[in-house]
Structures are given as structure tokens and as C-alpha cells.
Amino acid sequence: MREHGVDEDTIIRELKGACARNVPYERVLSSMCTTPHPIAIKAHKEFIVSNLGDPRLFPGTASLEHACIGMLGELLHLPSAVGYITTGGTESNIQALRTARQLKHVDPGKANIVLPESAHYSFDKAAQMLGVSLRRTPLDDEMKADMDAMAGLVDKNTIALVAVAGTTEFGQVDPIPAISKLALDENIFLHVDAAFGGFVIPFMKDPSKYRFDFELPGVMSIAIDPHKMGMSTIPSGGLLYRDERHMKSLEISAQYLTSQVQSSLAGTRTGASAAATYAVMRHLGMDGYRRVVSECMDNTMFLRDSLVDMDIELALEPIMNIVTAKLPDAQSTRKKLCDMGWFVSTTSRPEALRMVVMPHVTRDVIEAFMADLKKIS
Ligand SMILES: Cc1ncc(COP(=O)(O)O)c(C=O)c1O
Image (tube, rainbow, N blue to C red):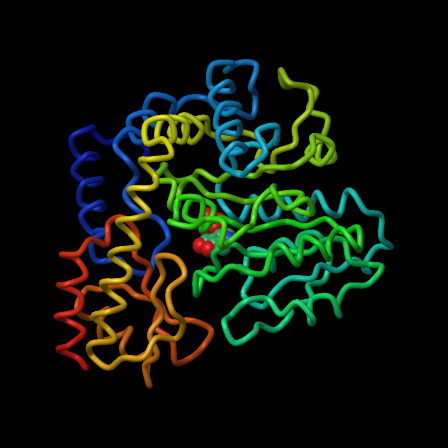
């Protein structure tokens, strides 16, 4: 740091310069984040100073967080669910597994978690931090968790099962009703990672096709991210529990704070995310989110059809707003597109190129993208 500070105009110029170097979302088909809804940005700015790590100093902000959990609980078929606004899917997944470890005593070093190969890498972080091992099960032909393999890996040291509603790479949904039954039969905590799909599935034409939430009796916790398809600001995640006892298992004494106990992972944590999430959920309502998802799905099918018209095979028919295309050299296509200013992803399957059709990926964006893809094909 400099000895003497710099004037505001210079700093604003520096900030604008840095901002201008960022990739505009309109060129990004690789991310599960998007431009937040304007009302979320407004709310975020208003609450930038609140610290939900010390909630009794910010009772107004805490009431917004409480209201967010209420709305998310209703969305996930359990209005009485408890939880808090996290920084995103990673924190929610870490905390859910930490809960599972608190609830079931297993000899140190022996605890394991059974989850599909497609589960997000945040579970690897969680496993390292918690000192538990992960037993990743293979997927079936449609990239869903293989139920028989999952059941076969469970033993007396299994502290949790994980299922995914909207996998990161392919947007697939695991057979969660069957996994819920397995969890109940074996009396194992089941966490559902709906970080992406939680704000998609309930707003699809037929949500009952993909049952994933608390209506399934074995589901004990859910990660759902407002900063992905919820159109809230970063960092906004949601972690919900079926039972207050689950969240209480994480409580740590925090004597110097107004609340005396804390269950969140972070100590000091922003209240701006709760305000932003509250604002956008209240503002859009169920029909607003249905419109967002319907538009994304129409654009997804437009992208899908445009690829098929070019004789490009799909890696999987889109379930939600993720398109995966089979290309002989996906990695080099990704690089060529990147040179043209487009960001797409490759996946753990070497032949698959992945494109996420977030709200900023409009029909115009897709047409421009396809025109460039044709140039390099
Ligand atoms: C299914 C799923 N879970 C968890 C995460 C991690 O979320 P975050 O990056 O917000 O921590 C992601 C991120 O894309 C995801 O797709």
C-alpha cells in the first residue's frame, strides 16, 4: 500500500478500467451466473453494511433472511424448513456434509459419503476439510446416478448420501425418489444439491417429472442458489434443512456476539445477499420465475436445434437449460471460440462441449454464437 492515499477520481478511473476488461455476460455460455435482476442490485447496495454474523445488531436484515428461507421452504415443499443464506453452493454443500458428520458418530477416519460421479467438486473440498472419504458411483447412460451402484457402496460407516438436481456439466437430475427411499431404509442423511436446478425445476412445464425436494421424505437438506437461476447477486446461496435439530448440530458458542451461538460457516457474513434475494423473489414471484425459465428453455431448444441443423450430435438431450454437443475435438473448438471472444466449457467427457443458456443468452446471442461456430467448423 502507498504511504499517501490516491484521490477518488483516479480510483474511479482505475475501477472503470478494470471493469471494462471483464468479459460481458453476453459472450459467456460457460457460467451458471448471470446479470442479477436490477431490483436485486438495488437491494444489495442498500444493505451493504449489514453483518448477519451478528444478527441482533441487524434485526431488519435478519428478518429478510428469515423471509427468504420461508419462501425457499415453500418452493421446496416444506414451509417449516430452517436454514440460512450462504455464499453459494460450495458453502451449502460443505455445511450439509458437516451436519451429517455431526449427526452420526463414526470412528475417526472411517466415515464415508456415497455420491454420484457427477456431483460438484465442492464435495471434494468438503471431504478434505471433514476428513471423510468420498465413494463416487458411476453414472448410467443418461448421466444419472446408478442406483444399484449407490446401494452397493453404502455400509455402516456411510454418514450421508448425496443426489444432484441439475448436474453442473449436463443438467441431469438423479433418481432422487429412489435415493430418498434408500436413505430412509438405511437411515442415512440425504443431501440434495439443487444449487442449479432448484430455481429451474419448480418452474418447468411439468415439475412433477423431476421430484427432488422435501416432498420426498428421505431428503434432509437442500442446497439451492439464488445467485444462479434465482437472479440474485453474488454471493447468494441457500441451505435448507428439514429439521431444526439438523442446523442446531452445527451450533458453536460465540460469546462476544449478540446471538451467543452461530451455525454458519463464515463468521462475519453479508446481509446484502439476503436483501437482494428477498427483493428478487418477492418481485418476480412464481409466475415471474416461470417466465424466466420458459424463455431460457425456448432458447435452449433454439440452440439445440441450431446445432442439430449443423449435423452436430448432442451428448445428452437437454433436461434443463444446458446444451452439450459431441465434437471430435471439443477442447480445440473451445479454444477457437475463446479466440473469437466466446466462453464455453469442456466437460469431464472429452468429446462434450457444454453451453449454459442463462437469461443473458438470448436468441440474438445464440445467432451470433452460431455464426461464429460455423466459421470454425
Ligand atoms: C450443482 C452445483 N453445486 C454446487 C456448485 C457450487 O456453487 P458455488 O460456485 O456457488 O459455490 C455448483 C456450481 O456451479 C453447481 O453447479
